[in-house]
Length: 300
Image (cartoon, rainbow, N blue to C red):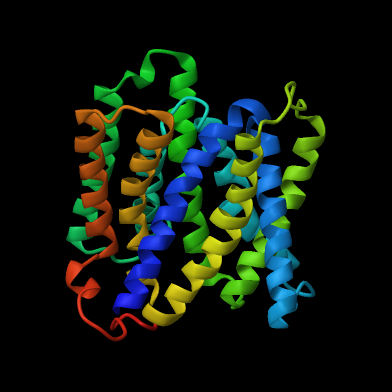
């Protein structure tokens, strides 16, 4: 990966790290359902505008079932679960839990699809899950029922991403932009009925809440997907997955800076275990981030 690609990777990590900050700001006012409905609706509209500008029409005919399946596991359900968890968990902890997505993907691939898995990946999975256990055991997560449910939701969300990544291996071959665009509209379809029965916000929306929703939808979903898929096209999926390792650092920074969230020893140590496990599971090699040119995993 060259210097330009690495700069975009850092930018993407900063953007996705901020998504947990924006959820923490907006979810107490809007609630999980309305927050995520606005998020995917804004993202879908933004990608529609980009598609018109680029001359890319969404191939709905013959692909709508695929878009709905992808939307459920890659957007609608995990976004909603993270928003539910954001009412109780810090931005740093949410981002660390999100970093387990490649671990869940590898575990599902090994157990469900019987894919041969090297021992180093099994070690990575065990380390990552041990890190989650350490976070739970050392933090005040289980002092109330709401904390327990928040933690369960925070783990279920990256599990959904693991399901989605395995589904894409056998799904119809659709372009990355079309998957992002169609997935957001599919998420709108799933969330619209829930928004119809969810309670409306009971207080006026502050400027910080409105900005958080807009940035969450347009920047953290629409723009971020465009950067992410360009990284995949240029450097391959393995290099692009490095964003999972960098996002927690930015989420921790934003949470501490803007919300005054504490950064304890248990968060740092448990997060380190999770990130090390993720690195081993994805086969991340820091040497691929050095030098110029295209990564050798271009076609992965």
